Length: 133
Figure 1 (cartoon, rainbow, N blue to C red):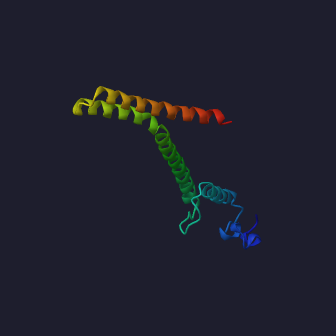
Figure 2 (cartoon, helix red, strand yellow):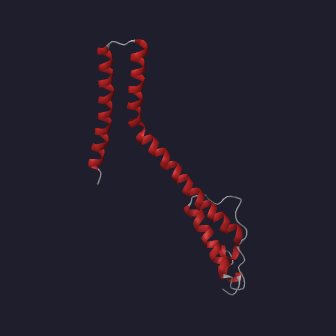
Figure 3 (tube, rainbow, N blue to C red):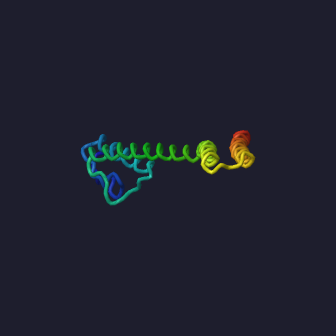
């Protein structure tokens, strides 16, 4: 790479790489790659020197990792939400039975319904897992 004039109109020419500065060229290429992969985009604010580009690349990678972890945690909460609900429902019905003196027959019917609902939920998940490749 003898001068940026050879690359007039390209991204290499835009960044004015001179004197065979391959490290700076690779730094810009790495920055562009990370910006593209992390889908951060190409806004008005961007790294203007190698240090800023490296720093921004690291921050983008950390941001994507944290965002992925947060999404995974949320998905886990949503997926496991039904499992905890049946236990909570049983606790509520136990309190209602004590506080409002529900008839034993009604109390047992509600318990059976809650336990049946929990079993059906687990069966649906098991059936889904069976059909997955």
